[in-house]
Length: 137
Image (cartoon, rainbow, N blue to C red; front, side, top):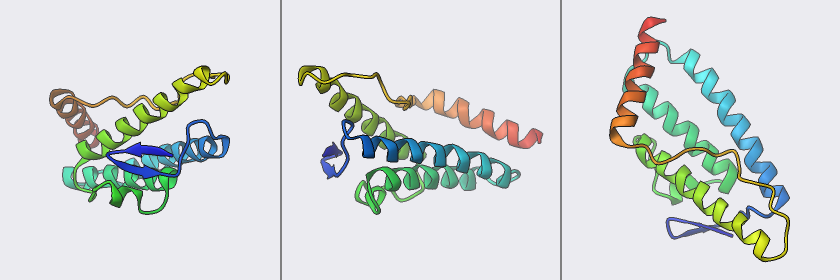
């Protein structure tokens, strides 16, 4: 079990099947991000943000179970909230994996989740760069 925002989900960072599900969800997220980037050329910033939120929400539902994003209070409008959930899940996974050596298990390293909580300035800069890239296409 993993706890995120006080909600428990049937996921363990020490369960091979759960980690395979996480890897698959990461691949689906990358693929969808690429597809949506092409589809959203010329779209409004609001449409782009909602699309990114939906991608993250679908990722969370795939990893933690159907309805997980809704249980976490995500509505598809606030990318900051979505990013914060991914960050919290990443932290919870790392915490679980850190227990492996204490239990005499082999620890294979960190997962490929590298999302840190974005500062407002960094997020604004990232969004402006994305908008500029869309406008230049």
